[in-house]
Image 1: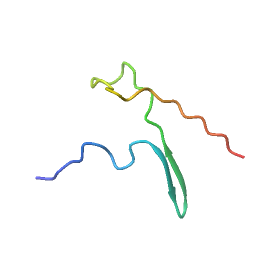
Image 2: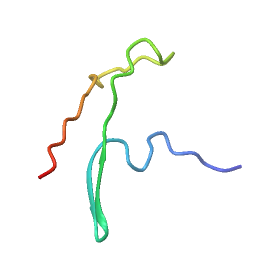
Image 3: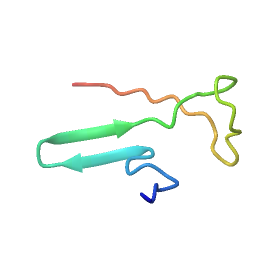
Image 4: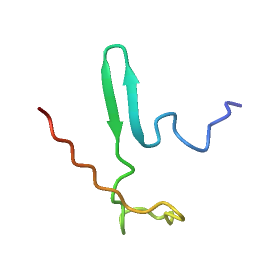
Length: 50
């Protein structure tokens, strides 16, 4: 039996790597998910590239 983690490796936030940066949004997910977002407020990320 394979053990599945509760949270994904990259759940949300900024992750810096040698080859670049990964930004993961926690998302808006209001009515589209059957599981409630307890203590996880909706998030919209805006990134300005210069």
